[in-house]
Amino acid sequence: MKVARPKRDWAEQVYLIAIIKGMGITIRHFLANLVRPSRIETLQYPEQTKDMPAGYRGKHRLTKREDDTVRCVACFMCATACPADCIHIVAEDVGDNTVEKAPASFDIDLLKCVFCGMCVEACPVDAIRMDSGQYTIADFNRKDFVITKEELMAVEPALPKSMQQK
Amino acid sequence: MTGNTALDITIIILRAVVALLLILGPVPILIYFERKVSALIQDRTGPNRAHIGPFRLAGMVFFLADAVKLLFKEDLTPGRVNRFYFYLAPFIIVTVAFSTFAIVPWADTLVIGDAAVPMQALSLNAGLLWFFALASLTVYGVVLAGWASNSKYSLLGAIRSTAQMISYEIPMGLSIIGILMTFGTLQLNEMVIQQGRMLEVLGVTLPIPAWGIFLQPLGFIIFLVAAFAETNRNPFDMVEDESALVAGFHTEYSSMKFALIFLGEYAAILVSSAIITTLFLGGWQVPYLPTETLIANAALLIQITLGLGTVLLALATFRLYKWYRDMQGQFGDIRDQEGLWLAVITGGLALGCAAALGFFMAVPLPAWGGAVFAMLAQFGIFMAKVMFIAFVFIWVRWTLPRFRYDQVMDLGWKKLLPLALANILITGIGLVLVQSL
Image (cartoon, rainbow over all chains, first blue to last red; front, side):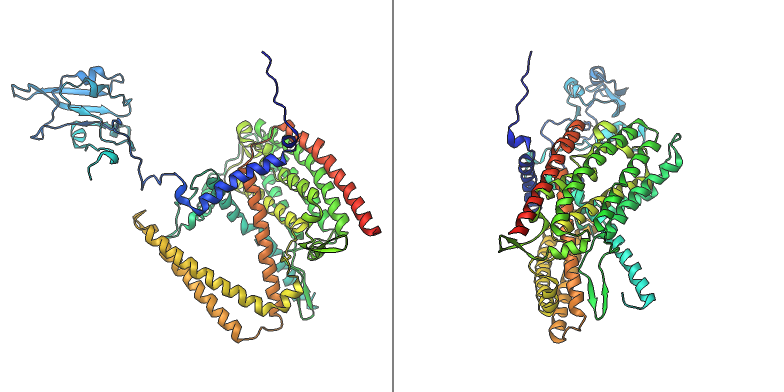
């Protein structure tokens, strides 16, 4: 296929006119931002945070019953569904015939986790959720990224600001 | 010359030191400009977080952090470099940039009593030739850096720079010939004095100062473009070309050696701006106010300046205080107090200005006061012009994309060179016509 080269007319060939036009555009941005800095949409990050949309998958949390015991029944559905194999559960007998099992330990390796949300989908008792809104997970040590049952239970849910009731 | 040898030597040393400070001082401001202007042009905020105590000064503190970082970084010398030339190159770049500034006058000759002190480090008759002689030496620094680094990126950058800087030196030199024909002198101070007159066309005096830009518009454009190429700035920064050559000729440099190259680059921009100002924008000439007028009306002008300063500083104080009230709790630490501190400082300055105004209204100026005021006013206007041209350098960098290498050569040899020759011809014809009329 033959592609015709674009022809440049006299004014474009001189460069200067186009350059001055371009400089006009940049100086307009410069002056507008100088006079009214609020026009800049940069988020001043640590002080301001982005409002994540509803359904955003953040750090996991384990939900609790009304008596503050863990809702999880250690059925291993989430660990089976997990494509990254990052959930490690050890089950124990709680001696309660309605529940039968509960996790003795429930570890999630956040460095392996791909935040796909399959564990949340798989859970039959709504014990694991990813609605904490936490996306800045940082630490100094690899082993600190493995979070335990107690830590998972301590994570608080967070609604996006737009959905919070005033 | 005052006749007193010790005083003469002191004055000569002082002139050199001031010329050095005039380059060293604005370089951090220029680096700050580069960051802030680029940010604002691209709808970003730019540097605004680093702080000393409560002072952030809209990010101006960053260059100190930069300097500290560069000082304490590991000074790495790659194994296969040619050490002598590798160490020498940054010094050549910096030295050349600094010594070029020596011929630029930053005010009219200061006359106090019998003594006349030229306000430039080096009052040479061959002024402009000094600039060209030294500016062409810059290429040695770049080539040595590239060659001694023993790295293909550096070498490619250096080769490009050689070709580019030599190519653009020709149109630059030729564009100056028009200026030399118009002013009939190589002395930069002499040129600036001539630019203090009003423009005359066919015997009619126009209310426009006879600046080089109005006498030689084509020469100005050619010189400006060539100056961009000479300082290796966008759109001609083939020498660095980070998308193709990592960092060009200074790829292998780190720590303070890199800082020196960086300093040299910005110093070169300042020197180019100073030369453009001197040749084309009337140098230290305050428009419509020649030196004699400045000296004669010094008392009145000082009072006007101080009065304006008081009003503006008072306005700034109120604005800053309002800003301080609006900004409460943004950071939750000492930085929230910045507006208050700045308001206190500007308020103090406003009071100082008002006090000085009162003082100058009560006490008559001494005999040398007028000359010193004229010098300061011209110096201020000169720096303002230089910073404006430096701003244009930055403005262009963040507007235009980089030329392709063959386009750079094409523009230099096939467009600018004939234009510069045509400019000489037009100037010559114009001069003959003016003289025969």
